[in-house]
Amino acid sequence: MKNSYVIEYLNENEFRKKERAVKKYNMLAYKKLIFEFYPNFRDGIFDGVVVSKNAGEGIVKYELKLPTDSTFAKVYDDIVLHYTVYEQQKIVMLNNITPDDILMEGHQKELTTYKGVPISKSHAEKDMFKINLLNMLGK
Image 1: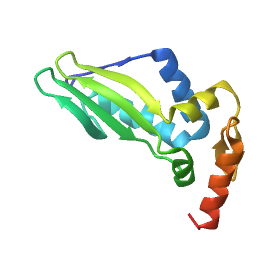
Image 2 (image 1 turned 60 degrees about the horizontal axis):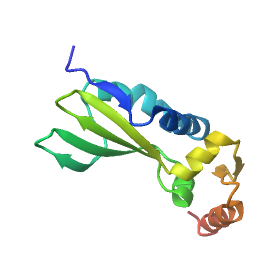
Image 3 (image 1 turned 90 degrees about the vertical axis):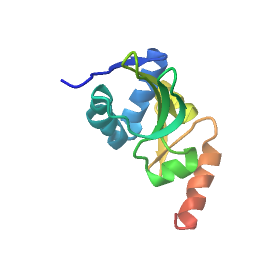
Image 4 (image 1 turned 30 degrees about the vertical axis):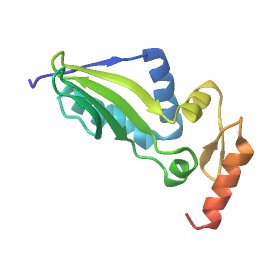
């Protein structure tokens, strides 16, 4: 068995809510997270972009872009997993999944979709305008 890392959460309750929203609105991203990225983390394989590194402490922060529908990404931004690796303690700390607003809203209430993209109840007109504009421009 390789050097196995333990997965922990900065705030498990908040993180799980966002994870469930990803599952509901982007099954491909959720499957990659559960069946590819998490097992890789346990095996010490860290995907994504290094955002900051503290070599002395052995702390590395990553951002991992999850598969995101192109229209969703243009309206809300990419779905990104933010995590920190503590190399000496063999811990992977799952910090956050962004974009926060749409994922938290998607967890709290069922979002309606417009042309295949979930839309926020708080600014539905703005989201639908963006989706229509992207469709007019031919993406």
